Amino acid sequence: MRKILVSGCLYGWLCRYDGEMLNCDDPRFLKWKEEGRLVPVCPEVFGGLPTPRPDSQRVGEKVLTGAGKDVTEPYETGAREALRLAKEHDVLFAIMKEDSPSCGIRFIYDGTFTGTKIAGAGRASQLLMEAGFRVLNETMLDEAAALLEQAEDSRTVLHAQTETF
Image 1 (cartoon, helix red, strand yellow):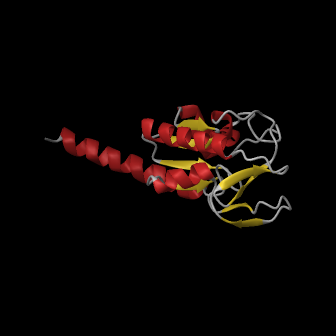
Image 2: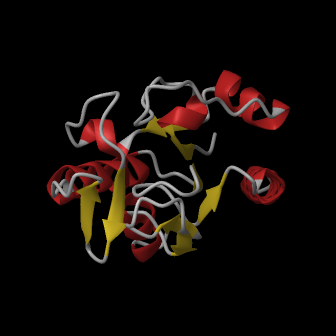
């Protein structure tokens, strides 16, 4: 069974910076969860940050809190752990939480703490993409389902071919 790396907050972990609950309740996602296909990660928590924690945003290569505290190292540590788990579980792809300084894939907040978003990726997602993993966000579940179906169909065909020899 192919695995999918997923942001812990989408999985249902209480790990968001604000301590609020966030779940992905799409029936396909819930089915993958029930099947044991999902590998949840929270880079911030894996990096040693508490829940709740101060809101943080990427500013260039650094990650800073609204008070200006540099929290880059915990974000880097968590990103490396997410990558390690993706490799360990040989995940097919990742589904990460958009807008996050760790998990965003298309947009992140601009570092001004004004709610302004810019094109960019969170540090964990960036590291995953640099390592060659396909990274999607929570709005791309149609694409995720298609990728999973294609991978499962390929395995079935390969398995059937090896049985005939």
